Amino acid sequence: MRPDPWAKPKASAAVAIMPEPGAAPLSQQIRRDPRWADLERLRSSHRMMDAVIDEVSGRRIRIGDHWLADFASCNYLGFDLDEEIMESVVGPIKKWGTHPSWSRLLGSPRLYCDIEEQLTELLGAPDTLVLPTITHIHSSVIPVLAGDGWVFVDARAHKTIYDGAAIAAGQGAVMRRFRANDAGDLERQLRQAPPGASRLICMDGVNSMSGNAPDLPAFARLAREHDALLYVDDAHGFGVIGEHPTAAAPYGHRGNSLVRHVDESYENLVLVAGFSKSYSSLLAFIALPTWLKNHLKVAAPPYLYSGPSPTASLATVLAGFKVNAERGDEIRARLFRKTAQVLETVHHLGLPTPNRSGLPIIEIPVGRADQIDAVGEFLFDRGIYVTLAAYPLVPRREVGFRIQVTAANADDEIEQLCAVLAELVDRFELAPVCERAV
Ligand SMILES: Cc1ncc(COP(=O)(O)O)c(C=O)c1O
Image 1 (cartoon, rainbow, N blue to C red):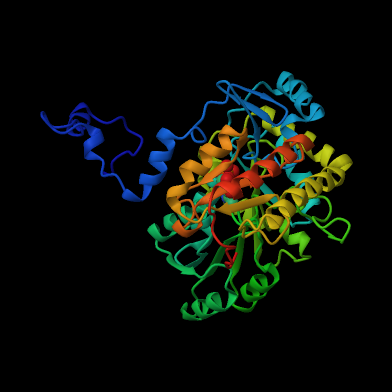
Image 2: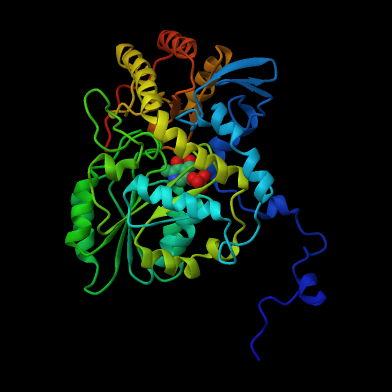
């Protein structure tokens, strides 16, 4: 008889996993991967990591006695602090309770249908499916799409894409890495897949560290020529960039993501992104054909087994759509202006940054990995909060810090940041301007 996978373990089975008498404590039994050493040191010693935020006031945060201007937030449009969006949660919570708690396969409050309908229209996509997070989507959808075929991952793709591809490899797919943003290298590797094998290409849209986007039309063309599916994670582009960019509005309009920004189609392309950045809400989506959406409803574990997003997040997504339609382009114009001011200072000071896009993600490598602690302390002391980009979050030669600008950063915060960057250049010897693929 086959064992029942849901059965409670018998007492004897539970005893079998107890440590032997006299065995080393669990902390010594777990072999620590030395790759995490730098990050572990920073986490335990640096004020800019694993911090407890005591209070926020606009885009300023208080940590203990220190008030700092926050340039580590991904709330690019400032929706987290928008009065209309904040007030939107009460009505739906009174109507639906705080959390639906059915798995989506059992049932979804109507709010979900409203979100998917409006999102599909905004993206101009064939259909959309929302799930709690992008991490959930990568870990569950990439293995379904890859099957026992070949999955090609951009070398600079987000860690959560790699994890999804690794799960796919564990389930029988062949995983290959291609050089970052290098369509030529990808094409060589696509040719190696045997005839008949399915091909899935996974990459970032706007890259979370460089702030640059790949040449999407080139990759989409390759996917179509090789009968492959292109899977793009545009977590940082959605909400910020959109259709019909012009010289006066370089980010484009409506914030409907990289695909529309470069006027691409969804043929052989699925787009993944989330609301946890620009829309300040816990929800994510995949834009896809309806037949695939229906297949994922039974084949992607989060739709069947995970709890859904809280009602407040569903409400703030819907309110976000309304604000985006009414004021989004004006907010993006403000975000562009603030970002341009910071980038102008960065270039004027000769600071290195890979950012060539003008988007609000500005990474500054510090040159020597051992300078990161001191640079971080220097910024903290001067009231600037950023993301420390330590190894292995970035390769060693790119260790530094990442500035993220949001529309909610006040002008005096931008000026403070620019003044502190000028001081930083005097104090530290930073890396030469770094040129790299993404
Ligand atoms: C490119 C990219 N993909 C995925 C994620 C994870 O998103 P989520 O929090 O929705 O799982 C992030 C988060 O920072 C990201 O930057």
